[in-house]
Image (cartoon, rainbow, N blue to C red; front, side, top):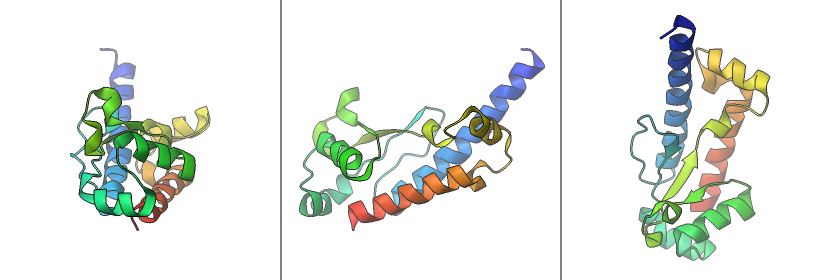
Length: 139
């Protein structure tokens, strides 16, 4: 591969690894089961261990209702696992972490080239917001 491409792939892997791990940590801290991020574009948090809390606090009975609450109450867009063939009663979600890299080309470029992307203000802010949402969601 051309050196420029190999470098871009390495930077992309570092960025994804850093942000995906940080986001996974926040889901796990809220009580969701989260497989360790590998190389996929998504995280797969499973809120089934929190089913009783989510039912009591928000009336959540399925992954679709969980995704709906996250979108409509908190402005957090995720996909229900059932959209990918999972059992909707499992309360699994698909979460794309690439949306945290930045809202502009300049932010995404800075994130790609940062040795510590999670310390960048827009990524740190997004991770803090995720933590707040999950704390409120799970009580």
